[in-house]
Length: 202
Image (cartoon, rainbow, N blue to C red):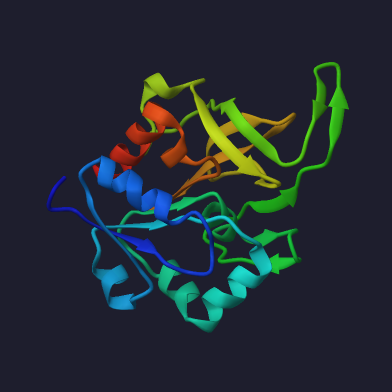
């Protein structure tokens, strides 16, 4: 993996450097950049981040990163806010997103059932299931990964993994060369590191 060039898209979102550190732990050369030439020439592109959908989409459009991301042909991995912005629409700020995936992003509601209260944000470790090939290996079925989010992507034709809180939502999405996880693989221990490694080795 030493010859692999990974571009991590730099924009007005938080938590981007933790993905860079995760690449370093894997021995992969990565650069955090908004330079369009560096992004389009990279072997792999990661689109991570935490933040608010509306202001972030405006930033992407103002900097022409929206068209750049949609036009990428190499494997692309969205993480957390990255997944949400790759969907068609988000209830957060009534935001039209990139539309790479047809799924829509909705806000969690506070929910109480026989299992107790489901607080918002959904934060902590939860298991994923119904995994599709790509960035997942079979032994990851029902493994636990780390989530922090108040909005979620509905399940649909591009769902590549599901999670329940309390009902099912898309823990991961996939379409063509585009992959995305709602959870943070860079914070999900050995399972998360293996997911990132699988993405790099696609």
